[in-house]
Length: 245
Image (cartoon, rainbow, N blue to C red; front, side, top):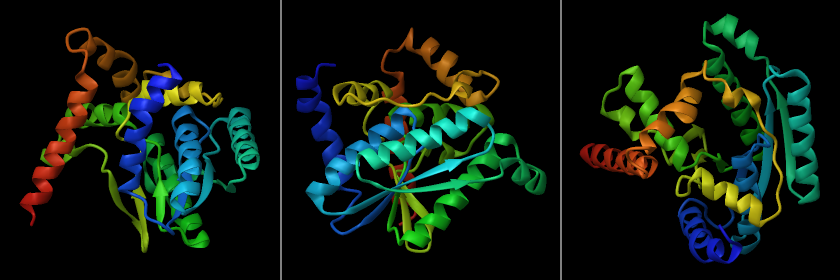
């Protein structure tokens, strides 16, 4: 997507969407892996922070699972934040210890350890929001993943737009309004690089199989399947929320 077209169509959508999630004087901590989505999110919020007058910091979590590659990711994140004058926090967690102590799968153990690190730094820094880089495609994957696992209606809500992290801190997802292709267009238009986690291409993980195999197959019959699944999640979430009132 050309920069002119992107700035005219996608960027205003991002600004409006994020503006509903972040208020003036918020302290926003950004989960920063160094991957394409988190680079897009952090760069965009850094630009928005100057306009909307909220404070920004980034947190990188090293899961201790990928050796040299993980260290390179941490170095990339630290350098990016230094270059853009963003306060930076780095945490290293022991996922294998979590697996053994809690009896969890590698994916669940990594998630639990990561969110504990997020909570620790959010409380330490005084954050009011934790921003994560999930986008529309992630939403579609999550709905399908929940269906494959077997789910009640709540599972069709997919990834929540906002939810509590810990006392006084709310998780927000400012990129749920745009697609993976649009995050990539943002990086290209702003001359940004990112790190690539090779485990994202291993179909042994069900989510990766959905991303790399199932969704592309479904797109051969319905080109807008990702958008349709994302809209379904929003509709179900709205219905369930209103039903509780």
